[in-house]
Amino acid sequence: DGGITQSPKYLFRKEGQNVTLSCEQNLNHDAMYWYRQDPGQGLRLIYYSQIVNDFQKGDIAEGYSVSREKKESFPLTVTSAQKNPTAFYLCASNAGGNEKLFFGSGTQLSVL
Amino acid sequence: AQSVTQPDIHITVSEGASLELRCNYSYGATPYLFWYVQSPGQGLQLLLKYFSGDTLVQGIKGFEAEFKRSQSSFNLRKPSVHWSDAAEYFCAVGDTGGFKTIFGAGTRLFVKA
Image (cartoon, helix red, strand yellow):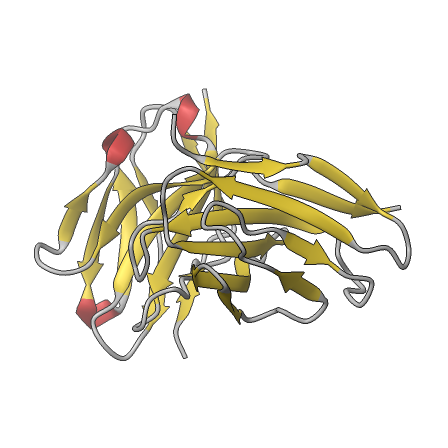
């Protein structure tokens, strides 16, 4: 079945540590996205990529980095510069533009 | 800038009762509008979308929504709620150039027997 796979489901970060969240899709979508979800705040866009080897900052990119070396993969690194990383992170993809988004099942990141 | 407001943080309805979730948006042109549903600890799933044409759109799971330009609203409705509808519902608006969907804060639906 086609879909988006996020791993791990739960992740713990120590002070000063960088952690990487994985996102893989087999939907042949050009566009991929990372959202952060905090209770009562909806989803906020961190980064998005319209095509391989290209990506743009979203509304809350500070403290995060991404890469898009393959069409299928869009990993997100939460760096030590992100002082409040505890949140639920969702990866999504679509065919581009305002087409519907397909979401992974998310990664819950917590700070030790 | 675009924005989406969902006035109700949570709503409780009895099983079998009708449901209406409110959504208001701020956008200069004709918007691309969406409703997504999220079960606890899961990703979001599209219920329905509006791009143009008929202002009453039908979605999956028996949901429908009506676009009212004069009220800048896109309310979600269901005539008879089932216990399995308990979830969080997000209204969203698409950016003009695409790629930057703006989400509301969500409305959590509780269904009582």
